[in-house]
Length: 148
Image (cartoon, rainbow, N blue to C red; front, side, top):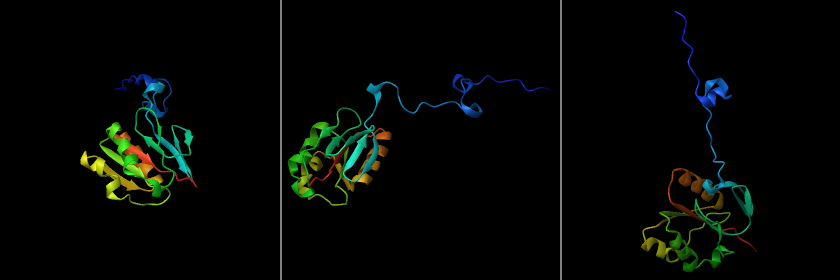
């Protein structure tokens, strides 16, 4: 008995290879774009292909906010307290080009609100933020890009 032809899903019929349905990975609506790290290097990070060369506070949605700190040694409790208004469930702190842990007094306000702080170097922080963001977590990145 001859095999009955099957209709392909519209995306496959439109030219997807081997009848595999095409997947749309990024929204064409710019209002739906989440803040995603697309590159990083010595002294910069890129968010949605826009290069930044200063310390930043980043959430998946909303504006990318400059974080007014130039050196690890200059961090104060007030720098971390700025994250409270963003109300994340976890903060990924990128401590610069190398791993350095902030003194617990710097993050005490976050701990008091049960907001976790994960510390790592800048590159690991960018990767971890992207993973947590993709999982739908309410993550904030506090990224230190040191300037001389």
